[in-house]
Length: 163
Image (cartoon, rainbow, N blue to C red):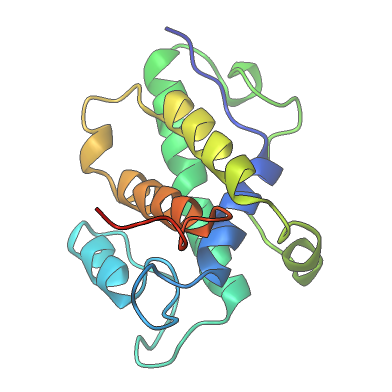
């Protein structure tokens, strides 16, 4: 199995989708909501927000989500290719060290369709699963929440019968 670092714009699309979509069945709260943030803190992955009683902006939340997903992807690729340097890790030629999401990104990358988000989730998961503990990471939990929100956003999903 091989692994590579995903295009940062694809990670930004996932992060922006998560930060701007409501959590399924939770009255408009964002994906994945305060529960996720508390769970992340228990795993020592603190968000960069100083005061958790204040809601971060969509851009701030997207940037944190993007960084979580990106760093897990990098960790996976480093696990697969431990002898490579940053410059020789498989992936884009110009790899940023961190994900930075601008207001421009929020406008430009916030139009991904649910099907594209699902495909991006599958791709990122495939490139991020090279570590033995991947399924216990905060990034994995976030990706599952994004996947669930995308499925529930598919056209016709709400009209389908509940069985």
